Length: 583
Ligand code: ATP
Ligand code: MG
Image 1 (spheres, protein in one colour):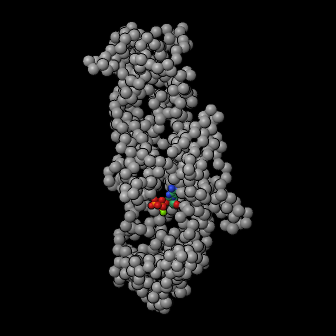
Image 2 (spheres, helix red, strand yellow):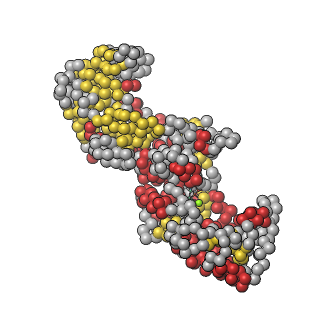
Image 3 (cartoon, protein in one colour):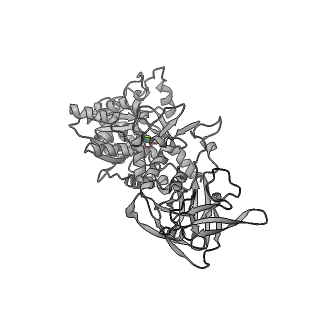
């Protein structure tokens, strides 16, 4: 079970997941230091890299970036900024089968949107294919690499297990000349796909499986999105990654924990080659409740049409979060608050929502939109008349000014804001009761109109003309304040309300024989028609608003058209009711 303890009264929030690592974040105090910075500080003390700090973000262009990548981006670019260093963007494009320029473009857009700049340092592992090939020749000449003819399956069998050493390949002791000849012929396309590999000659008895003569090249006739058909051999990630870092002069190669066991191999390669030796530092990847973060799974959601593309507002992708209404500042803030750790943990989704609320609270205009309209007729307000009332755009930001909201005889309020037979603590509208309409008057419910089925279709109310701002009774107190729109002036808008895409806190936790799709939440999207104040007719796609009492909403960048805005609910409001009541 998920426990979210929100102790707003004490001015801080706890985000705690029982049964796993407890995570506590005090939103008021950003993390000052972390173990990565401690390592860098130590290097700067000893002068290991001559006080240089050069990091990189190395995505594989085989999918869109997600919130986990955002953490890595913030960490790598953030550290470079903090130390006056640089951060490269490098596409680790060694697997032509899964990679695409569409992904390259989206990755660049997302990093820029997050607020980071790689200037002219946009690199591709594929730019180094020739250098990597030369490096491979060096290893062969030094007797450190050999051409192997075992099949993939045989290589697996020869590799051994965690408890048993592996066996040497029968091709391991080929002469340097034979290896040079065969490797060059591999490159020139003489051999069929998969028939040979180039392998490093390390140690088949190493307790670390990565050191058991790992594959460096495979033969693969596949079109590469940058090098086209120039190559029919491709370097493995493990062979390309460390050397790419070295070529770029990276000082601190920050990556996730699963590469800890690969570090000895990366170290071995650069040491054998005698080239610049970066320091790899591993941290725990980000996991967030209710989100899947594997690109393979995200691709399935897209390909099977379960979501509306990589940027579906329910996706944990950066483009999905953007479309949903998350801001760059809120994502950066989130990344800072989760910090970096050596131990795997799962962060509560509530923290991400908290971060966006905080940012939007400061910047989003307050407007009124009624999601489930119930008509109210003000019987003592003249027919055909419109009164323009002044509404504050954002009480947190005086510079945002005011706007006009039309008040008319026929209005809409939220259906849930009326109860015919209310319980004790219901401070909204009920027969004979008074409430204040936000920025407007106090109204009193005089009569309830129903249809033949007994459903309420309309409320007949009277208003107290003395209770508007600037009038003698402006400060008269009533218990509830409701949002509303003019029924005749409001515009209809499509509103998309989202819930988690998965109904399980850990979407990967499935019953036997079922996959993660069995945990999909069938109600993750609800599309409704709402009535919103007319000022929103021309709202710009991507603009954020707070619909008073209903949450933060963002104008959808795909479906919105001038005059017919479509809104995504970014996040609901917390304790809004308490706030509105205080006014
Ligand atoms: P996959 O989802 O297929 O495992 P990946 O997440 O490793 O792929 P990459 O493109 O290789 O995708 O990731 C680029 C960088 O982002 C890597 O340095 C990786 O360590 C980091 N990264 C990826 N996922 C996370 C995560 N959940 N938390 C933190 N960093 C991450
Ligand atoms: Mg990866």
